Length: 368
Image 1 (cartoon, rainbow, N blue to C red):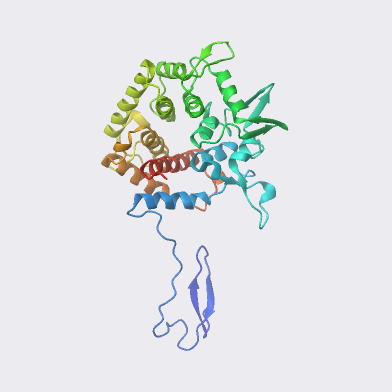
Image 2: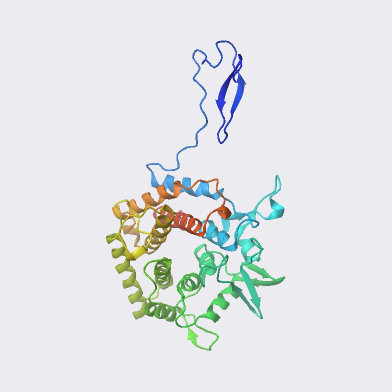
């Protein structure tokens, strides 16, 4: 009940009201010339300027700092795809008042336990990133994040008190290359650190290089209804970039990969929904779906492939602009106060891939 000298003010995030003195007048009546106090409002995330919208989304979600007590290594990995070396994480000891977060890439590279799960294992002179629940979703994903984030190859890693560097992780991924395995994200990672002319031998003493991985991937037919297909396309795009970065003409395998990229780019736009997004079944179905999380997940992977692989002059295509705008609007609907550790794998993957795609798009259109 409001008394004679106070009126009610809404408390954001609460179910109660806070009382404050109001001199003169009847209880709860506004003073002459003074507007009724309104609750503070956050500025809108989505604006008419897509660059500002992306910056808003990246800023808001950068505060969604995971912690190693509640999040798995896979959560930190997904978060690092977006923010790279700027990604932060809390550890149990760093959750006290006034404590500071630590670098998430450093936590992963130093094998910090996350919900009692670690990303890395060591064997002899090799350091490996684990694949499976809570770790990498597929081989090479950790190295791909490091490469896309342009983290130096001499960045320190530590497992069981033994020191390594990213160079050792690169050698381990090279060592494990094998026919008929999914090498899509391995290709993304290695293409970020190697030149096309570099060769190595795997555990079977076979000679490998970037071109051979591309050739093996061209022979593999991933499912068209999940992220395996967009991961493969991301690998092709990374390999083409590697050749172009080193001013080496594309050979037959790389030309075939480049042609595949162009075919999928055209096909992706042909099955794009009027909303600007795609069906949760990726390239195997066209149409809308009521599952917002699955729609975001599939659309984010398709948009990331497109913004990473399209020529720069096609990024302003109306279909691409519509896709980016729709993706940003969908990502903005996810509440920013929900920790990554409280989100499902589908939600974490959808949100972080969407943010990564939007960041790539913005950086390509607005280079620093």
